[in-house]
Image (cartoon, rainbow, N blue to C red):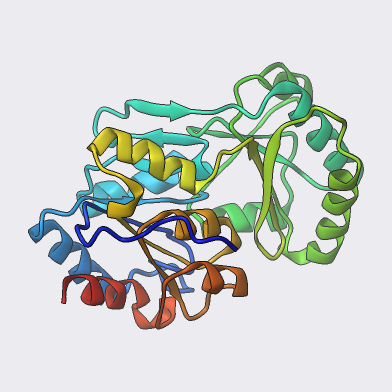
Length: 277
């Protein structure tokens, strides 16, 4: 792991993951985290989520919490501003890469979801996938595979949810990654056990932070981030100061500057307390 950011001491943006970080494991928001958002607003510090969720799911948080800053969607594949929903950045994976991973994972018996940032498309739906999407307040439009293929140029993320078959998914993805055709450029990560994600090359939550910095006129050294997973690592390394919740992965803990209590113990609020004093 390589630390990139050096904290400027002047926080101009706080960015946080949602699942297993901002929300508790049961998906509720700890009251202390809501108070922490209020404190950030009073201090004049913008706040953004950086999430693997697609925009309609994340929008429920911004509307309920009154968040107006641009948000990082689909692990960085889209950056969107609440309110007018202006897209500040959108980064498609590319047709050839999507064809490779989509059909390879389909052949292995999995159901890949394709995201435009605004909607999920799926060739079919089974009960485990439906339950996983419902847990994250997400849904997918089931459509004929030929229609999905025709939209391959527009998708910013491919994701497979298979927590009930995590070892099988890891093996299948590993085989595909081991023999990727020469010239294919992409990013991939297991966001957590049983969830495999493919995005465009150099697209991550960290690239989303860079887009927000350009929008807000600051640098990553002025940013404080909070996360828990392997898909947060680049963001945690990039920002000037970074916090990982106690339930985070080993890679995330090595990447962060500080460790705070778990998501179930309002670790996000603890990070804000440390930041604001």
